[in-house]
Image (tube, rainbow, N blue to C red; front, side):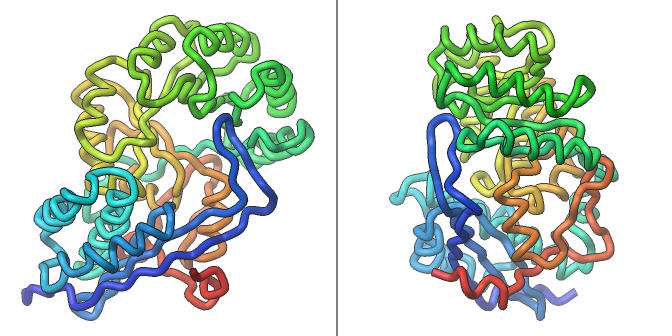
Length: 362
């Protein structure tokens, strides 16, 4: 077989306004920036993306594109090392790694397209479909909006739903109780504080939430406080799991979290650590006997989640669902709470709807 080489790299950033201003425990926003990279080789076009600042596109244009030119797109480990190495003087995490992640995903998509197989078939499937949980419930929502969104997911067969807390500790018990009333007794209720609590405050809140059957407490304290995460994990009520890891950019970070015993479930986000890094995190989780859950970007995670035995479920995040459904051909919706990759489409099965995206281009 003739070896193809990368002939062209393209990247574009898009800023998509939210339906209305949104907030979580520690952050507020009114738009989301999507950075989409395309790689061309052998008559095929691979697509990858990250949710980041437009600066990630600048890093690709100014630094990383030249690293990939003329390279074999099937040599993903070699390309990964070159891309990561190019960040040495720029910083090995943050914006730089998000730029690498978009290219890494495009490489995996391109390789599968060149081989004319779906990405899950290239990786090897551990399952046919991955369970999803509905995610949103922003702190900017009224009680009625919160209840409507969460109950809507449950009515669609998504029996796990997550809401944001942490901005107003006094209001949080009422909001959590209202969420439980809306979704009934059978659905699982997850909460995400986005690091909005202190250690003792998080422990007190865990006790309050136990009465509402909360089974998942995400980022009860700030993500880099591994000692605090471990304290909450060890002291949380039986049946309530802790999670963190969405800000992991490299293997070393995931290893530290697991070695410290900081969480019950690790999270990883392939828009920040690449599909390569996500799969590495999944292997670590198998070794530590800790489950893995993907963070945001549901369309990007379906295939790697189906390929990784350690994965428990995938986050079906409201903002990204809205964007991906609008801008990507091949978007997949959950059926009975499960997301199943379309194996009849090569690669990730996604193609950017460029005409629709053009009005959001930066």
